[in-house]
Length: 324
Image (cartoon, rainbow, N blue to C red; front, side, top):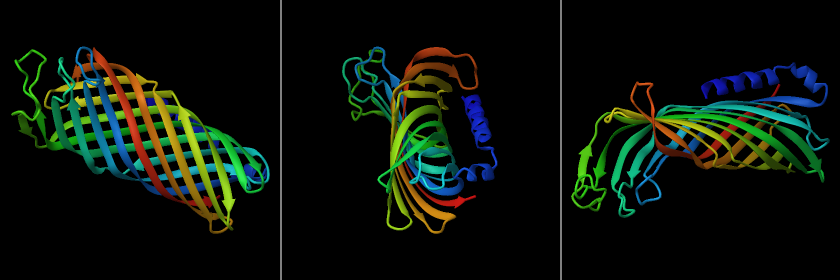
């Protein structure tokens, strides 16, 4: 998937690599936008059961609460989208600042006789990597002077990487051992505390989604934009490493559904300078595929079941938009 991401970056850079003056002669502007913002939410890792009673065998939630990031966006669009229909495009990159970002929680439902929780563990979560690359292109259509309708396609590549430290585990006792029947998790459970790095996880996403937006121009210099995207075109690769057990799980997943509503408020300070505030929620669920197991550091994998992945992140950012 990293090769796909690298290829996408090269294609997008080549697309934008044209002289600004040539576009400006045809009524288009190039805009460069440094950004600073936060991402808050969770990445989800799922293991589906084969012979147990609960809907899930395992669910791991990795907090990003919050992760600060810096970024850069490059836009090309008509100088005044209210005057004539036209083409627009945007390339944006966001890079997270590593640090502690909440908790990692791991839940298991291993019973073959009921749906009670059997295993629970919690660790301090650290976000090691957060990288988002988004490229969109489409057409804009003005109507009734103050409104512009846009239709576009967005391609996104995302990478998240985490590790959990310290914390504890609480496991229900099996009754009798090997039976698949468990005491209640609060009935004298096996309890252990941890110190140091315990578990790590990474997700790499590639999505493509159509979208629409509506821009409303109000008051001198102000505009507000509402947008929405939805798509089942999703691929994800996940790698989970359990240090104490010396085992790793490699998951290849696809499908599910992506939804992303967004809002942008922009104030044009001058003809060449504007300030923008962006808010969006990206939600992905239902992505599933095969899971493969191996000792950590080994390339010999054995299929071990079916896995799933999910993502729910809220993005809020301030940007300074400068026309080139």
